[in-house]
Length: 480
Image (cartoon, rainbow, N blue to C red; front, side, top):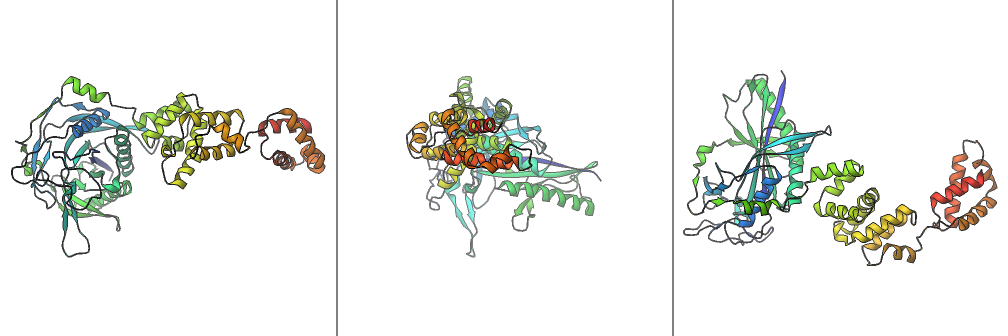
């Protein structure tokens, strides 16, 4: 029987703010356990919350980037449930009036096509603490994370493969980093993914399974593909459909690469939502919305498309350049200053990335100015230096304020383009290598190899300073 995979994705994004959502405790990864807490985030009697304005603006900015309708009026709701890492026994969230809804984003599929993914809602809430299960025979709870601003993005069930789910998650990571609303570091828990998965098998649909708290792209893709196989096998075995079986949540076993049953999924009414009496609703007027909208930037997918269309850059180069907004902005500034896009891209994605890896920093952190890299690109384009010299000068630029030309002159890397000097060197090489000259000027199958040998001799005698293009042309003329 023909089956179709149906996946909707929930994405939790920890916002990059100095303080928590409803109190003044600092947000700090790696702080000593329970050292960043107060009566408000611990839910102590009499403590009153106050909204973090920056977190709300970050959330609206993200919703705008996802083409959502922004609610002019929204409120805070209490979502009641008990877990050890929920000190208040409820979570402050948004239920029926999310700050953003009815949006969309685009992803690139494996076939190189663009696919539209609808966004159902974007809402803001507070994160829970963290349960710690280590070698002891009991569990621990760290409340440092409790109350951290958490943005939840929910897609419509428009995804139909593990690869598409992974592509959506990766694109969202790029978007939040470009907007500057989150570091998007999954190792630090800044982003967590929860796919909701089921199958359509002819006229039937299997029960929806939500896989909880995935924190890597690999686990996300593999869990979706595994669950598709498991649900199809289960349907063939017992025929249970959505009408007969309820929703459930499962965890991901990374070692065994399979999902594991956790519990039956709660329905919304089980959370007993009601408006939080301690927080006033939020009204977004036109002026405030316009100010937030002014912070939008060109998003990564559109920037990648522009680089391919305008500069004819390859997929690898475009991927490297647009991976981080600071590097992409740097590249744009260098192009605007007159640099050749392809030459700049080669310098950044090849020699630049090699230097960055060796020094364990980003290319931007090398401190090479756009003026210097543009000058270096022009020198390479004009033939003043060769590619090897350009790479060497680029590394020197990370350690000095000297101009590229000054470095090239100091290191003797300027190429000789003077025809008179090159002709003298070529005459000398021809005089010393009669056999190679005879072979290079013949129709012998070794002619190309002999010509390459003679060019090597020219470069050696010029100590690598001969302009290869001019030297090659002059040598061919001398050989007839």
